[in-house]
Image 1 (tube, rainbow, N blue to C red):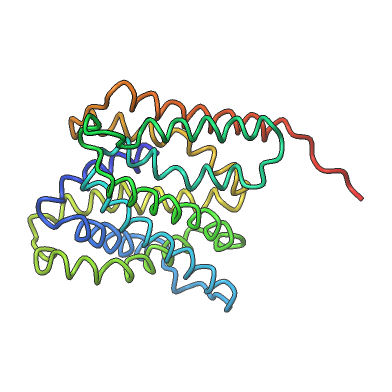
Image 2 (image 1 turned 45 degrees about the vertical axis):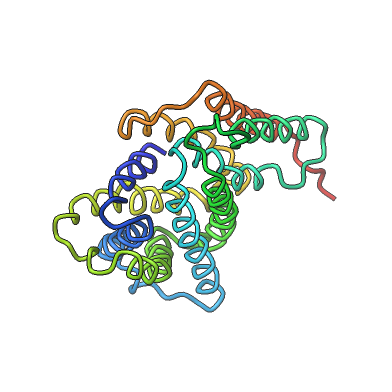
Length: 272
């Protein structure tokens, strides 16, 4: 989470130079090259089922990044991550049955409501940014589900293949949006830092973790993402949030933590 949100703040610094699409393409392409050199995925053989899972995983990752960076052009980092968190939270609460489960859902919805631009007083919260962040959240849910399937029986080389797939998806958008600016050597150091912090390191760690924990629990453990994003936006980008927006982020995090406790206390199903 620390790597991801620090990298997202650095990525937003690239927007004036290459735009959101260019930053996405630069991040994923450089991350794919780094992961390929480190983990050398060509040494591993995958069957058709594994390739299908990797392509779905990489496709969800590429779309998630494109939507998320596009959202950052319109709304602050902390709010974008909080709205994007609808995806992992939906995975965690899928199949809710008990009244306490629905309480967490209501609490999360209340938090989202505090983040929506209901009036002009919402300041930097643009409706298009909210919509893009929610689309990124849907893709984040797919990233968790497909990542768990792709990572089962695999390893960090799966992350390299997934990021490579995501880069292939994002690169045409970046080329159209930024053109030859992507080849400017002056932006390479910042682009490489973004690639390592936002993609190469966290995606490799995710791929190691996902096969060992349930997808629902993984989604809930990411509950700290909005807080880290808000803190990173404040320290690095000097983005401030209103009291209501901070309350919305806190409500979403509380719903995630509460759902974690609920899931942990449930007894296992009886064996037939």
